[in-house]
Image (tube, rainbow, N blue to C red; front, side):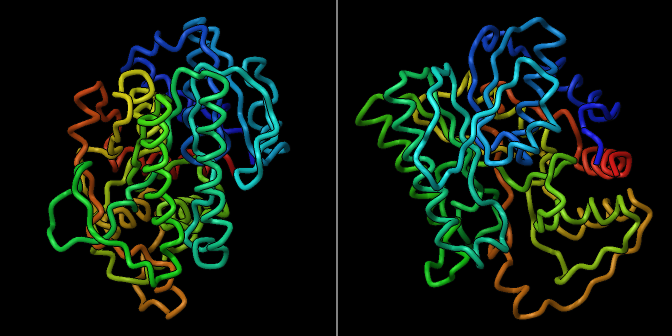
Length: 346
């Protein structure tokens, strides 16, 4: 597969985001990103890399990730980006004095929540604990933790979640290995801010999609664009009526940098667009973008174990908009670009 940073549509999308924001507060800073090759954090790194090139920002970027070969393909030609070997389950083995730390590493696939619940929990909680200790001892200005909208659990009302309203999480479900450790990790961030005066800020992304997703990511908003880009028919295993806050990865990356610069210490911020979209509507847009068919079938019992139990996980984004975020892409535009970019990369 080609490097996405040579794709004209993607690079233009990155430049569009950069024109919409003032990231000058990050100039001449050192930024450490864990999980920097993943769906969300590679988009963050891409913004920083092209910001460096376009605005002479002199940002030093460190990617802490388990995938060295993936780093070489994606960022090996960029002197401003350096690699650090990192496994979120293991103790930290590097020594970098970063101004800002963005923690996005960890298991992020419903298949793994069920097949590897122990590793899911350890990578989430221990990974956060180790980074908080690192932030404390290295006197970083701030650590931003990328949590998840799944911390909200399920609720009866149809209202979008704001940052202070929570539903329930069924701890009898093995899939809750993900949402429960995300909840615990958020409390740990707040505890470090309260007890040790470590500056932390938390973001809760909704359902993020984009061409930076892994081909092996089985979340529907990642898998369907890849299938459509290959000209393959899409098959849904539910009616797809659940409501979601589908957000283009570059909009999500911009929101993360806005929260990093402007967020209040100890606060949490939802990341999602103004639009609320059903799973079925998302799938229809993707099918249209790839000129492929969309089928709806009954789920198997194994499929049901992996499903997100939240019927309406839409997010209220008013809080992050107050500190400077705004959508650059509509859901239709972002999904259409995603399929087009992936088709060009194959």
